[in-house]
Length: 267
Image 1 (cartoon, rainbow, N blue to C red):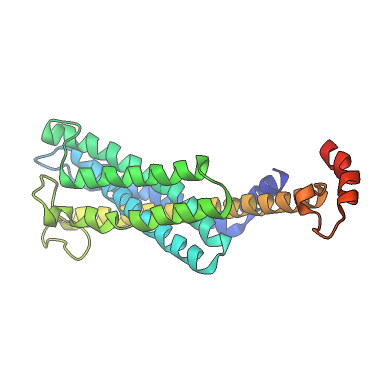
Image 2 (tube, rainbow, N blue to C red; image 1 turned 90 degrees about the vertical axis):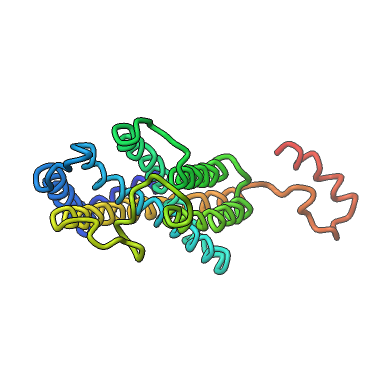
């Protein structure tokens, strides 16, 4: 625990962290100004349309996160280096938060527009699947088998789950849906956003991405400290633990084994 606290103290005193934090804070304040003061109120949707500038960036990060988890998991399976597993685990934690916020902010937008909080729209359904993928991953990490076996099973979930990200994006193209058309990416429709809306939208994307990078980098470093502490604890336990009968050389005579058995049993 002291190692983790020491690492956290080191993180909070690093200049780069203060710079990223200050940049994130400045961008957040500027984004709020653009959303609530700069961008005009939509004539059809009213003030509820403003959640668009929060909902879409969150959706972007939710889908990017599962891809990062999958890539880091693949690198872990390839290299057997725990740093990639730590990156995957740290990213999945934030991915779960973003997936939850996607559903919540989407429901807030849907109620005044569609008249319901939830509908089994293709984009909403595939997003809900993403939420369950994150939940499955984190439940496995918390309650599943430990060690290498846990990391491998989690990596398998991540690799399968990453398939859902492009499906979410293409859901509007593949299935009939009431969800708004594309506003970002290769399938973006021309003329969808005016200059003011596009400016606020792009700034919001940058803001959320910078803040996400700041949070993830710090969480990853803390996760690395936790992993190193666990490895150190295992090494110390292996040194201090007395030998078991099964670990004693097979060349030891039965008479010797019988003599030391009470000693091993006491431990």
